[in-house]
Amino acid sequence: MIISEIPMSYVLILTLLIFSIGIVGVLTRKNIIVIFMSVELMLNSVNLLFVGYARMWKNLEGEMAVFFVMAVAAAEAAVGLALVISIFRTFHTVDITKIREMKG
Amino acid sequence: MENIKEILFFLFAFIMTGSSVGVIMHKNPVKSALFLVVFFVSLASMFGLLGSEFLAVLQVLVYVGAIMVLFLFVIMLIAVRDENFENIGSRFGKTMVVSLLITAFLIQMTALVSVHFKNKIDTSAGYERTIDASANIKITGHAENISFQLFEKYLLPFEVISLVLLVGVIGAVVIAKKNRRKLE
Image 1 (tube, each protein chain N blue to C red):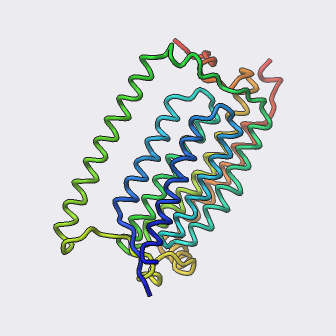
Image 2: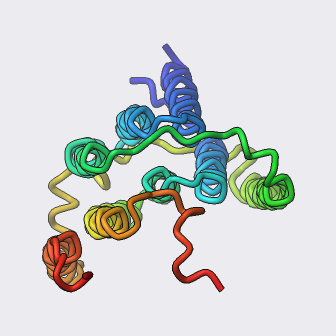
Image 3: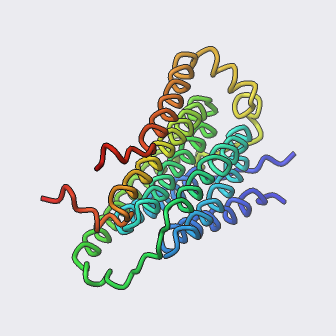
């Protein structure tokens, strides 16, 4: 039986790449929904890192962390999208550059 | 056959990177959401490749089945127009700051990774530590082990997370409810 192996540094670099892409999405996009999607990208890249380290140290703690992150992300998505609907009802737009109620 | 897992890793890594670039680059939010579905499915494949098949199933169920449906539902509910990227050049300073920050972050994290694994090479007999997916299959990854952990060690966080989900659902309903009378 062939034991195949993936170097941990590959997983780390992939995580780094996707997290950076998520940061770029959060900082450059103007649509609230796409910003939410970028936040989901960042959460999932960290989940991948948790799984990689859990496999590396042969430990279950990392996978439990992923489980709880998933549950919190589900709650966060529900509340966040409700907020998006509420914002759209109030301002009739989801463009964050056009929402200037609290701009000083 | 020997490095089929490595080939699969690179395949899924390629799909994940490409689809996440698609998420942040595409003008149409619906297509961004569909790119995000591709990302989640390939991430689930990656979880399976790393050996935690329970989390792979959970990823597809929770993210693709629940969260993405919610995203698409909200996009459908509010009429979202295409974002125009034309005036991104007028915000040149902001774009410069963002790209400088990202470059600094990437350089720093890559340095961290290389230092980390240089130490690892010293300690572990000349080769890098690798993720061994099939040798420890009894220890991690199976739903049985995860459920034992969940109901013994993590019983209190499990109950708290169910409360968080309940509060999230109620909060979402309350926030999204129409209260025109209050607004006007």
